[in-house]
Amino acid sequence: MLTKRIIPCLDVDKGRVVKGIRFVNLRDAGDPVEQALEYERQGADEIVFLDITASSDNRETVIDMVRKTAYELSIPFTVGGGIRSYADVRRVLMAGADKVSLNTAAVQNPRLITEGAEIFGSQCIVVAIDAKKSGEGKWEVYTHGGRKATGMDAVEWAVKAEEMGAGEILLTSMDYDGSKDGYDLDLTRRVSESVNIPVIASGGAGGPAHIYDALTAGKADAALAASIFHYAEYTVGEVKAYLAERGVPVRIPRPTGAGVGKGIRGNADSK
Amino acid sequence: MRVAILDMGLGNLLSIRRGIERASGGIGSGSITGPHAEVIIAQRDAEAGCADAVVIPGVGAFRDGANALAGRFGGVVGRIRSGEIPALGICLGMQLLFTRSFEGGEYPGLGVISGDVVRLPDSVKVPHMGWNSIRIVRSGELVRGIPDGEHFYFVHSYYCRPGEEGVTVAETEYGVHIPAIVEKGRVFGTQFHPEKSGEAGRTIIRNFLEAAKR
Image 1 (cartoon, rainbow over the protein chains, first blue to last red):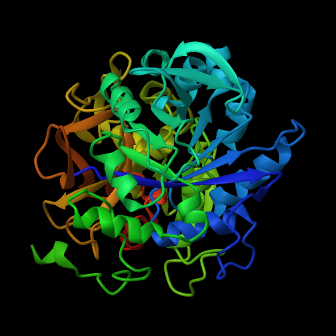
Image 2 (image 1 turned 180 degrees about the vertical axis):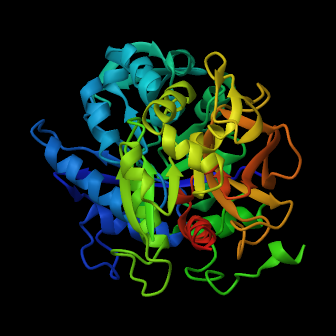
């Protein structure tokens, strides 16, 4: 059975992780690659890096981080933030990222979604939507890191993004982001029911129960969380154990090294 | 041993290269045992020709992959067909082993395994993306040490429908039964990405290298 994914998000500024100083077991807690590896060990299904660097002369730093991450990590990872052009998409993917996440650039130039999908495949193109409640059952799309209202309806934009070739929607509720009160379940469910591509719920996770809600009532395919993992309030493994106990299909990796080598004549041969 | 990744010019091969290095006990893997593969990224037949095993990577569209294989690697393809050189096809690379694909038209594949590559049903979200469990349906080289129900990372919109019996070693469920691992002689395929599947994926790659050495 396809499992629900748990995706820790790392905010990166000038090549350094912004939050997440509480990991005592890391040599360098500010190093995004080290952090990503720690999450992989905890059982994360994917990693999202969100580059929040304001300046645009940051490109080489990001590409360097992508290369190092691709070298070390053996789970998929997505890079978002500041990807403005097809050249940016190409550079990040060719440096080894599995997916890019497009936000403002996708709204300004939806052709970018199509171009990226045609060359690299839909699965590489994530459209990130920052949505803010504008009325009963209505959400408006914001760009520029949530600073600029677009007048676009979030559900309609998700449907259009799929039509343009997006392989996945990363949906952030601006109302709930940082609140730790849980995800916007109405928004998440509305978008998830309106598209035929996976939806990642984002914004508002304060604990495992919120993630459970997003994946069940919210009908999300994956849940993204930042601070609960950054500040080591919960490990990815703890969240997954909570979900598994309640019947949500999740991947619980075996401890590293188990079964490797010694299982050479394992169950497959005994059949 | 020397392993060649066939570069079809369709994307970044760093992940798969590292996946093989880690699984083989190669550079930076922290392991002192294993098949110790030297990994080369081959752009032409001549470069791949001296390898003990080849990997057909999993990025891009079927048509482009098939063209690149025919155009750049005609010699290697012949040696894969004859069983002279073991091959592992990953994701698209596995699909390329089949007779034909209906991705964006109708295009012939290598035909090493008979069968079609068709789109996933509309009843499920496409692409099939994320970690899915496999069911092992027969013994095989790649599943040594892999427990039934193990999870692997899938990302694809098309799947293989073998036209011959016995090639499927493991399958996964996503609207339909999808062959997750196929084996036929010295030709192996995984619909999932072992290089993105953590420790379990590492075991798969290592099993391929061990099988290729024999």
